[in-house]
Image 1 (tube, protein in one colour):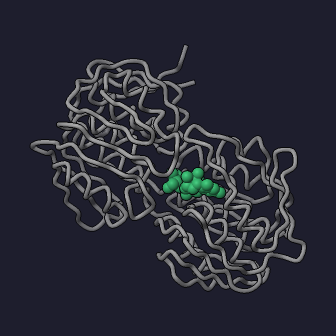
Image 2 (cartoon, rainbow, N blue to C red):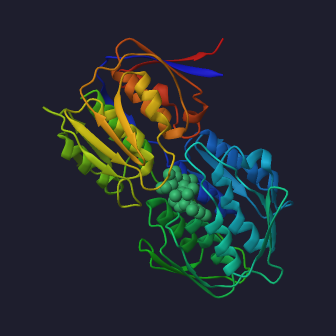
Image 3 (cartoon, rainbow, N blue to C red):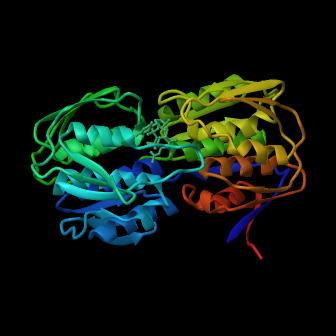
Length: 422
Ligand code: UD1
C-alpha cells in the first residue's frame, strides 16, 4: 500500500489543469447501457472510481477500448449479464447507478446493496422507492436488490422526500427507456445531473426543466438510444480543492479548464474570507489575502456549499483568524477528518453536526490516516502548512477521485512524495 509524505511550509505558485468530473463521468458511463451505438467519452478523469465502473460495465458485457488514459470507446449493444456483483459494487457506492438503466432495458436486474461507508449509513431507499413507483417489483435477497419489471417500466410522478444526486440520475436513466412521461419533483440540480440530462437529450430523449428541481422525461418505450460523443465537464470539487490549497498556503495559483459558474459558492466563500478571485474564460485565479477571516459554512445541495468540500475548508479554517463553524447537513458522519486534523494540532470541537474550528493554531506534521475521499484531501492541505513532515496513510481513498494528485501539487511547488508502506 502507498502513503504520501508531505514536507510542509512551501508556498505554491503556477497553474494547474483541472480534470474531468468523476461525479459526471460515472452517470455518463452508466448511461452507455441505454445506447445501441459505439460511444466516445472524453475528458474522463484517470481515477480508480471510473475504472471500477468501467470494470462493472465490462462484466455486464460492455466492450470498452481505452484510446488514451482519459478517453474511451464503449459499446453496450451486447449485454450478457444483468447482475452487478458485490465484489465490484462494494468498492464504490455509485455502482448503484446501473440499477435504473439495467432495469429499464432488460426488465430485470440484480444489484448488490452497496453497504455502509465511512461518511454514514447512505441508504438507497429512495432509488428503490422510485423504481417501484415506475412499476418494478423489488425484493432484497442475499444482499442484492432484485428488481423485476417484466412488462417494462412506466412513466410516473416521482417525488423525492430528500434531494438525491445519484437517485435523480437513476430515475432519469430509467425514465429515458420507460413507457410514457416521468416527472421528477424535488430533483437534484448539480451540474453533473445537468450534464446527464444533456447527454440523454442529445441522444434523443425529450427532457424539460433541465437545471430546475422539476424534470419531465418522455421515455422511448424500450427503444435504445444513439448517443453523440461526450466530453465530461470539469471537476468542480477537484477545482475547489486546489483553490483551498492556494488559500491555505496563501499563494497565487491559477486553475485552467474550469467552469467558473459551477464554483460560485466556493469563490464567494473564499472572497468572504479575504481572498481575491479573478476569472477569465475557463481560468480562475486565487490571490493571497492580507488577513484571513473566520467563516461559517452550512453544507447543502447545489447551488449551495458542497459537502464534498467541507473537509478541505475545515483544514483552511485552522489558518484563519478567530473561530469558524462548519455545519454538515447532508451526511451524519462526515467528520472523520476531525480527529486526524487534531493529530496535526488543529483546535476543533464537535457538537452534533457542527464543528467549531479555532484558527491560527500552528500545525505540526504527524502520521495520519485517510478515512474517505474528501477527508484525505483535507489532510493533504493541512500537510502543506504543517511544520515538518506529514505522512498520510491509506491513500487509496485519494486515488478514487483525484487524478495525478501529487504530480499536480508538485508542479505547483509542493513537496509531496508517494512511498510504499514497509
Ligand atoms: C452524490 C455524490 C457525492 C456527494 C453527494 C451529495 C456522486 C457519485 N456522488 O452522492 O460525492 O457527496 O452526492 O452532494 O455523484 N439519501 C437517502 N436515501 C437514498 C439516497 C440518499 O436517505 O436512497 C440521503 C443520503 O444519505 C444523504 C442525502 O440523501 O443524506 C443526499 O445523498 P445523495 O445526494 O443521494 O448522495 P449520493 O448521490 O450518494
